[in-house]
Image: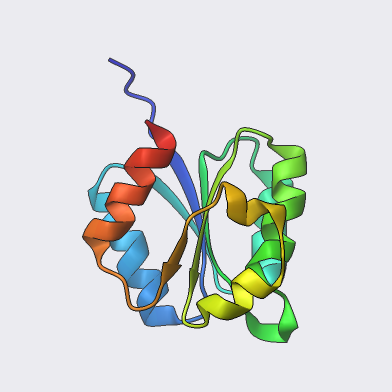
Length: 124
């Protein structure tokens, strides 16, 4: 059995949701990195050599979308899995990003069980 912790980067500007997701995933055995804006997410992506999963809000401060974070992240890490979360799912679909063919989109509010199921589906 592989005991290496899977690493997840969560990008979410709502501090309560960020804390909730991080605590939940840490409790599930993941190593969690947190960013509350695109700049922090890009800084983490620039310094961390290994990530298994990116969970990103679609609508972030400064007008940056989660798609604009995920696309360059995938160029650096083609094996990276992505989950988008959004209170505005129609906006995500309107981007026309090819990422939406492979990355699940969870509409807020979602349950932690739904998130867990999506993660298991992507990483296992």
